[in-house]
Length: 240
Image 1 (cartoon, helix red, strand yellow):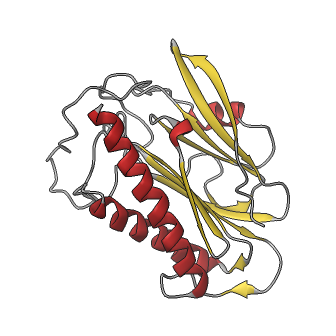
Image 2 (tube, rainbow, N blue to C red; image 1 turned 90 degrees about the horizontal axis):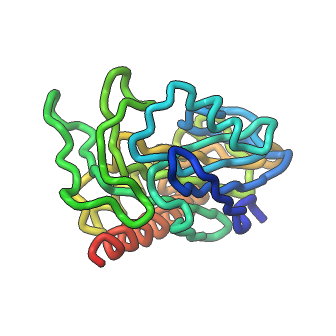
């Protein structure tokens, strides 16, 4: 078993909005790699938080903010303007993936300098604020997507070497992009996407995490399914 049992879903009122948060309690015995500001990098972690924040998030203490919303101790805290209760989950051969998908400003990673991301010219989805610019956790001084962000959490019940963990993050990103293009979004993601991959601390160590390795292929298929379902759900809700 991995750590992705059904998460706890809680709500809080912040900035005049009712905002949700998903919490997975893994407990001891897990190692994670993440791009999140709280608990990012590689190390032992015991929980993962995916918290909805206001679309115009501009707090200058995001690490402290996410830490205060968590249960305490070592963990990972991700944030998004998307509705976290609409998360999509998938599994493949023991690899599990969960994605919260917001595509208000779909982005090509290699856009020309100075060319703004086009965004989706529509009102925010139910439960979100209307889109507006904000300075956040991306490039210093840059504006970040408003109701955007694709956060992905993956868990596998085996140990990975450090290189395999890095390779797994690449695999997650490639599978995410494949799913988005298949869903009809011409983009590689959004500028504020985050990822977390959780593996066991003990046991035989997997040396590879690429899409043609045993566990990398399982991760890729699970992530692809979760992001594809999440992207289609996001589009369907925008159309209503």
